[in-house]
Length: 171
Image (cartoon, rainbow, N blue to C red):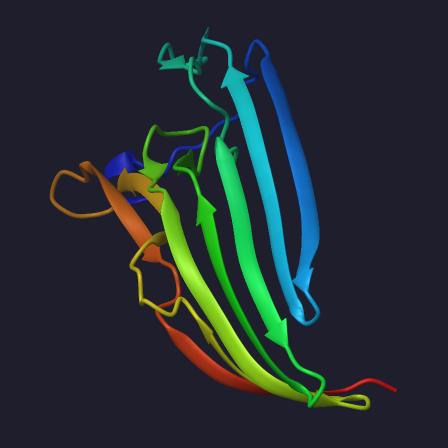
């Protein structure tokens, strides 16, 4: 590519370790009121090594291994068929690539839904990212701008608040 910054090569690292723990559960507080949670903890390390071009690499967490993640929610439903759900989802900061040291920032979003279910039918109005929190879906780091093609951070933003309606029939 222009500026010579689109060279790509593959080099094997010395080694890596990944360990983690996940758990999920639901608890019925009262008839119709349920609390749900899922949590995950992860630890990873890419050992230090030298690339074939002489640049150092490793010595940090592997890409796509956030130290924690969680979803905590509550659902209320009544025998008349109405229901409501509220949840918070969070993830720790993480590297998106083993090729650079730019991190995607940690985030927390709130999702909600209200609806009606009867027989095999369910209709719901839902909102994802209710508070319209801005966070990255993906982070890139490369040279793309003239004249010197300096390496620059580029961010692909996650979806802003989304509102929708879903109708489903189980048969």
